[in-house]
Length: 330
Image 1 (cartoon, rainbow, N blue to C red):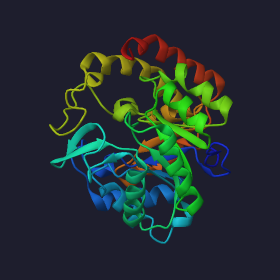
Image 2 (cartoon, helix red, strand yellow; image 1 turned 120 degrees about the vertical axis):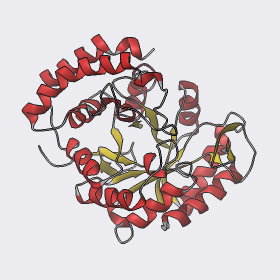
Image 3 (cartoon, rainbow, N blue to C red; image 1 turned 45 degrees about the vertical axis):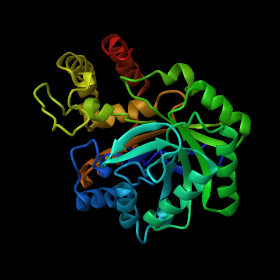
């Protein structure tokens, strides 16, 4: 293994670890609860192991994940490239209804007023004076992108955010952001079992100097090599009843793991680390966001950012994924 791979967020000059720490699970909601002390330990362990990119959002537990991140990085803010989000709100019912959490309706709202409200809330919860990358979480069809981007640029001028990005976008959304100028990154779901952005985003963003952050790169743990056919999920865990975790699909994944495991053994790595390293080797994919709910998981993820796969190893995994997983991605 080598040192942690670092990459630039678009053309901002902001360098961050290629492996980022995602905090969706730390929010607890949809993940069967959370242990705050273990979550804070995970964040600190990730920083100790070379992870600098931390990705969070107000919607992760209605501000809970942001508060945990704020506590964990106390005294270490300058070591962190901090990304959080806006656009999923519960203080107003403006914009389309999206889901309910904790008995509260959450709406998509990327209006200038909502963004202004949200950034102040996030800065307070995170106990910081700036957000390095501010990301529109889910796109709001009732607000013009021009209004959203103008509000984000105002926050940039004020120093509250350093750069901005968009998540869960269509090609049309991406084109609209590009037309307004200034977008540094997109954040989209990407993994061996979810590769649609290869056709819609990866090459276009690479050519435009826009970073691509992949989330759920281990597909909610499906690609970790640790979820066997007999694993049962709690009723409030989003994986319960998810067709991606059907016995048939777990069998498909295991056939890919039969290729991954020997490579992992040769590398002195875990299958999950090899999957993350393979993901980072895909053309146009800049960052891989990986969740961790304890210190050991965070350290393991960080080590994946130091792993160098040979071209033949990457090709072997790619062939296995295409052979066994592509029918499951449609």
